[in-house]
Image (cartoon, rainbow, N blue to C red; front, top):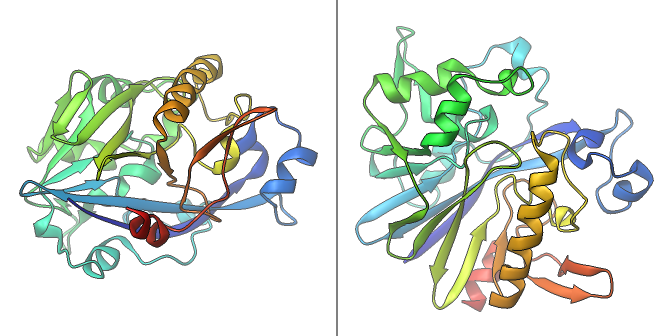
Length: 282
């Protein structure tokens, strides 16, 4: 099994939205904001090559959106999607599977592009695009709270062009790649758990966007059912601590990975470390 990890882009969002009811005086100590209360997020993807498959987890915002939309995203830096893959030896045609943790625009927008004629095309023409059926049905009939995050131009072409595979239940996509469902952030979010060299690696998506979201009550305002998130976090953190899982963060601007530790205040993240350091450990 070969693992690769790269940052498609950075972007900014309101700090209060990312930490919900946690007061700014607390969260700003660990994740500082600028003068407009904006904080930087990374937008990272993981690639797992195993058993003849090249699996990409999430694919970023894409480049279909107009200037007005992007003016609210504040994108900066990063390697880009196709360039980031190329730097790790992959072309879009090499990808066999795209697993979308969920269908908010920053996780799935790069899977579809517009060609020079304005027609929608698949960025990864040989791939199946996997999403949980629960999330697909939720996203294509969105509630008013999430509707702005679900863009039809990101979603419908996957189905119209015959690439969509709806996952009905939790389990292995291939041996060593487990897909688990969580529902607090949005219904049917997939959290991948990779079994690599005897260790379990968790691509945390929006269950734990940052290391600083490990404390149970540190929950985003974006979560549609925060009390469900609270329960899911509590159950999964106990499992992860007992199993010595390693977390790989998708949005943390300051760290790629961490482990977990038990402290007098409960389960917390260890100091962060880079993906390159993780690969050396394994």
